Amino acid sequence: MNAVESAVRMGERLHELNVRWQQQGLPMIGMRVGIYTGSLVAGTLGGQQRMEYTVIGDTVNTASRLESFDKTVATPNAQQPCRILVGESTWQLIRTHYSTERIGECQLKGKHNMLNIYRVLDRITHSSL
Image (tube, rainbow, N blue to C red; front, side, top):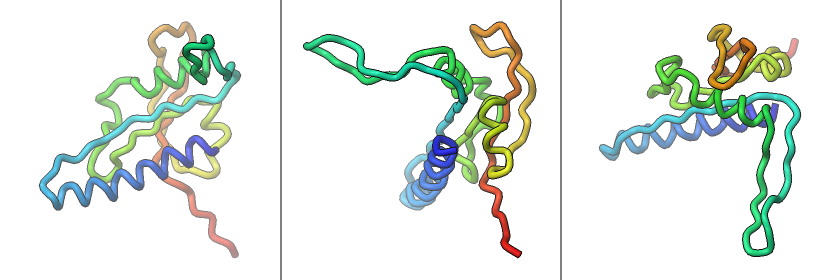
């Protein structure tokens, strides 16, 4: 939930910046985000001369593949400058909080199994009765 909310907020802020930049005659930019839920290893790798905090594992690789998935699908635009794609495991956790559209079932590069891919569109506002 936190990762998706962060990506949605980045998209909102990027939209604001693009409006400002467009008014200044500057080019607009877009971005892509891939989010996948699963196990991974997080920690510091390296030695005394160079240490780096990182994450590794199939979950990280799948998120990376989602980010770079078919750049012609749901291309970032002026209204939605941030394309957020999630896998089935993430979609199951967020589907009652965010509106999404199913992109389809695809085999990502380097993966053997098919994966359902969803695009996050916006938050679902729950009205209180």
